[in-house]
Image (tube, rainbow, N blue to C red):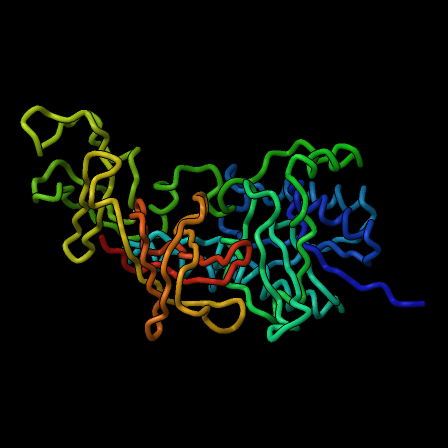
Length: 371
């Protein structure tokens, strides 16, 4: 009799990974659940739901009929993800810890642990697809594709995965709509069928972001200026602001300093001058300082193991945006993207991810944008 393939699936206690585990079992795999504990500093706080998530994951495993174990990756998370997260914020950039967590924890530490358990494959509840190329010059290569549910596609967060990782990975939800996932959860009686999707990352949870960063970062208040150098207020520390931010700046009642009539346009964070500890703000969503026609990115990672040919592709410079046309070229160790239509609030520290249709090619970390 042919041995069933063993799949170790990350089970978070959420509905997506729970339905994924059930689907894998229905497909005939031997399934083992693994609950990853990645954060300990606030274990007893109201903001981090690790304990409840573990209870939910264990309850689902019981209903689905799979074994589950908990594994603690908190030290790896702190060293590989959180330390980088703090370094980036301290440098005035806005990092995306989900991208780093996928590359360093979920598809590295977790994958290694699963292989020690004798797994043939790993799986997660991400909305994405993996395809092996079966013919042509790229035969045997694995591609990362967008999920069929475009509103849930998470390939942006997975763009740093490599061939070795993709060759061992299953995404059971890649061809399923989120609404169907909820229907399956209710039909098979999962205890978390109506559980809300998690937002953000556990170490921040639902607490005010500024309160959280206060505990870990050194910061210094400084001037808040307009492009012409007029001081219109003061900031509480550059790390607490991100480009394009409108709420929480503290300038709601201040009229424009740029025209005699006074403008009622909203204020936006436009630039950070880390060297002089100055925050620049502008009025109006489409102010030129908020628009960029090009960017450069570094820390490049290509899913195929090599960069795509220079030319017309599509890109995302933030998760919640449609793909936009760009001309891409790799220059030494950097990636340069040029946009026919200027892009809004391109933010250093975020990821620029390239696509060729549904195929995610990889990308890098934005470190500079220009008009």
